[in-house]
Image (cartoon, rainbow, N blue to C red; front, side, top):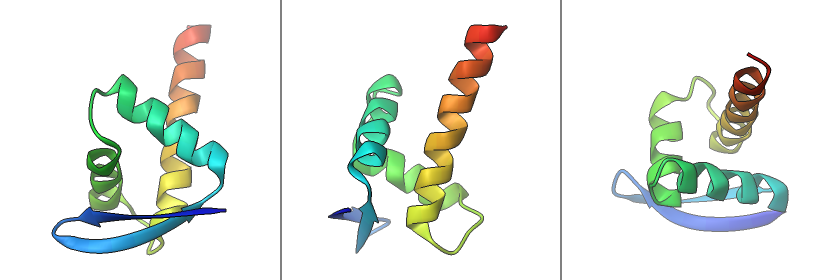
Length: 73
């Protein structure tokens, strides 16, 4: 697990994720042409789970599912 600290909505928070999820989030941020912090902020604002790490993992899963769906369409 890699733990990173960042600012979201004016407050500091830490997120612990596996390196593969961090790499996926960085790929998502690059694809959306935004910073990693901005991407995490958007995940935080849209999450429906109390745990930000879980919300980030689910966002990665959805992103890859959408890419797979687009490739098979």
